[in-house]
Length: 164
View 1: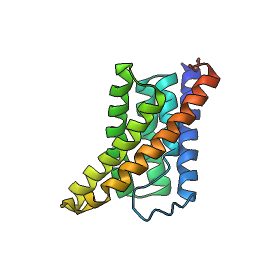
View 2: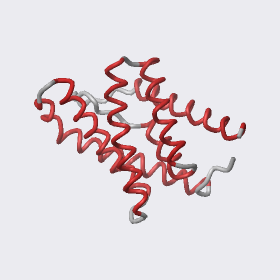
View 3: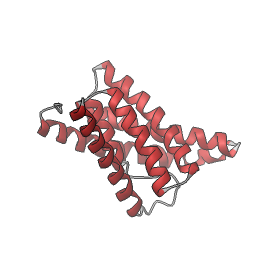
View 4: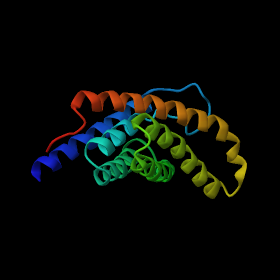
């Protein structure tokens, strides 16, 4: 159990580092909410190599900690809404067994942005923010695809599982 806890601590640290690096990379899109999703690489890796429960908790802890360290309460709210929706969709798509890591991650990227837009509609009290949907949909698909390819390559190189 101590070994598993140490590994989970390392994954949380890796996810936080990815979140921090992401804050340092400016994206010339001009639309709020567009990010590279580097920390989602850790979530996808955990989902495929260790399990859903561990991936879920590392994702939630990473959002809370990175929000307190690098962001604000609204950032935490938007990130959590996107991550929870994204995680649920990735888990469901993975459980079908019909699609691979890249497709699961792409679905996660798309639904992360849909979850954030849903929260933005609730917070703003109107649907005007849906104007950003086409760009966020494309950005989520692209970043999810790239993260999926990276995760797939890492999983192949580690032999599919991380052993505790």
